[in-house]
Image 1 (tube, rainbow, N blue to C red):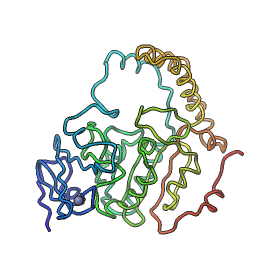
Image 2: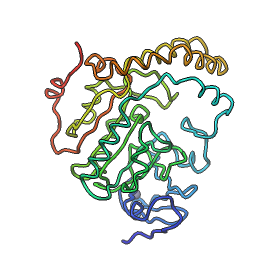
Image 3: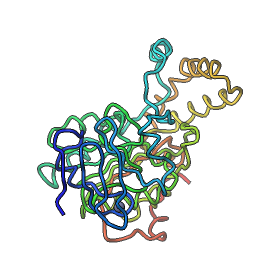
Length: 327
Ligand SMILES: [Zn+2]
């Protein structure tokens, strides 16, 4: 059955629309201007669109419901404008966070994608706003970028849940998942989905926190050590991995959350946030010295992994030989 594609109404390009699949049964979809419907007669699920963005959620397997998005309910990932005065004040003081590798890693990732083909297709999971260092990827007109999320950020073109990615098998040359896997209930399931939608030898770029406190309220579930993160991607051949943010940033966060533990008052927490920035922002600069040290692999704020989809699975015996920390 041919797709019935409206080529002007949706934010997704026609070629990406043709790759969409039902998030429940993985069958093809009839994509109309106002909604999309599964062609499988046993399923026939109907998925509404909102603001020219399809909402392709498998509600039976997700913590989100389609209604949340149709009615634009406030979720944690609400990206509506914040208090401008407080934001300006906050931005006058340096942040306690510092990602030292993302920009360089994305340049590497982009080069490797272009070695695969002239116009690689790249899925960004959690791409409603710009991730750290990702500018040269999203501004590269030679890449077909699909930015998805569970929120209507300025860049969202598709609402979907990473546990059921609504694309056909082997759709993408690359998948980016930066600072997202801690916010999904089952990261192993999500990485299995990434594996499925990648073409053979397709590339993944992931950044995931280790030493970071809860930063998403009820939408924050898991942390990974360096080896735990490698095991998560055990069906991928490693191209490169390491720390993106070091122990200096981890210490600044610990100091911040120590002080924040004294109160639940929004007012005091905002003031503490400012106080922490003023008194602890230099700690992150230690990471320039530490980022590539073995000890940092035991103490990093976050890790990255660049890998290639493989037919071989890394065994746990092989995994423990990959420990490169200081112990
Ligand atoms: Zn279906």
